[in-house]
Image 1 (cartoon, rainbow, N blue to C red):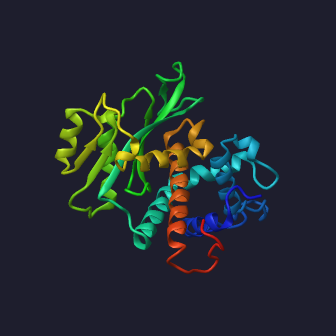
Image 2: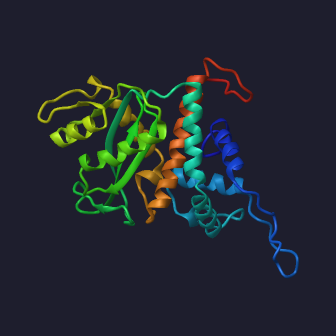
Image 3: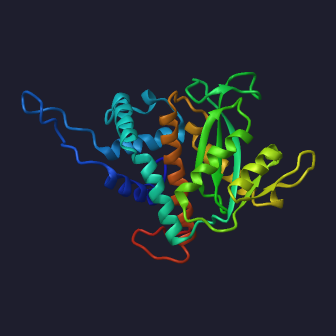
Length: 280
């Protein structure tokens, strides 16, 4: 049984394959003029999806079709080419063209996950007995489509991560005139309000000491997106030590989330080949 349904994995793969440079199936520099055939990119891509979904080790997912070393080498090659970041950008552009990003309502919030192996962006968790953990400061549109994130150690407060998170809005210009940023009580400070005012943004911030249901604002969308991301176990328990690798897995997960939302919302309004028989 596939880790994800074909109607969800095939569209990202087709675009992913278009971004890859052409490679010969055998090494032309081999002294005998022959060599083992190059492992198919589709096989490695499917292995990365399995790693992302299950969160297991590279050795556990390797088999006779592809070794753990090949998965790592091909992953690093694609990171150097910037394919993962480009794939996410194309998915967002497609969603914006067909459905439309709700950029006048932005939500920002942090989420703490485990990082048992430590790493460049990990830090001592204040809520897990000082164990290594990873914090992501995520940003979504008004529907919950992930727009970007900043990775840091769990010992970092959410508020200082707001500015670098909002900097990623530069990729979505031109922006609407009146943008509301929904934040929880952790951002309730004059520094946050000054930062938002300097960017021409309007903030809707929960007040410290006052209980308010999360449904009272549009902040619940990012809480749902954090849950979607944590369903990919490699993000919930990050064993990657390099930030570039973690970002690549986040970009791949955000692409899957965006494409799934696109198919779900376009299912009732559009028709296309290989359209699912039921609403995703």
